[in-house]
Length: 179
Length: 116
Image (spheres, rainbow over the protein chains, first blue to last red):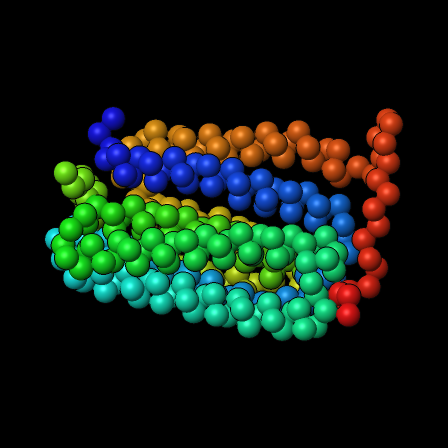
């Protein structure tokens, strides 16, 4: 089929992830249409925080694709540096999320405060877990890339990261804008 | 043996990737500012319509789906189709308050605040 095994495996992973996140988002939309009160609850999320995190993830996707480009050119060191920039982006995203959740929980909005907040913490938490996984894998890949070894992995981990970005692109309007 | 990188198609240079990122950021700005007008249709278009455009751009230009083997897009498309079947099959029941032998008893808390 002329697709490297690693990349093929990555696409299959993303196919299964599509169903996981698709099911979650589909359920959210259904419940949201049923419960008008969710708009009031969603009004307590901070749009600017969500927008900033979207900007951070978009920027980290840029560094991931530039790392892939550097790997294609055989520049493993540059690819490793750019992957670490992407990891930094993931770190900033998680830090902002941590502050945001701390604020919301302090305000009394916990996972048991209503259906909206249950979805909010489940969807954003599952997404954050994927960000953490991506950061760990990216760090391991950056170690080998810095030695100019296994450069194809840079593209594979990049594809994963872009998918995480795409998921957030849909979570952002659902959780932060539709009020 | 190390696998080769994805090199079987024309690629964007650094400048065009940055340009694509710039367009994505501009779209993000529109999706944040659009709903501030308070018009429902405009909110739907700017928030969700632009989300679809942004996702398409990331898939096409960053994930390189445009130059990937066609069946990869078919697999992902098939998964999305499964989600639509799920939605279409479940939504009619979820969106109704009662059925032939069942009734929803859950009541969403009326207050906007959470538990304190």
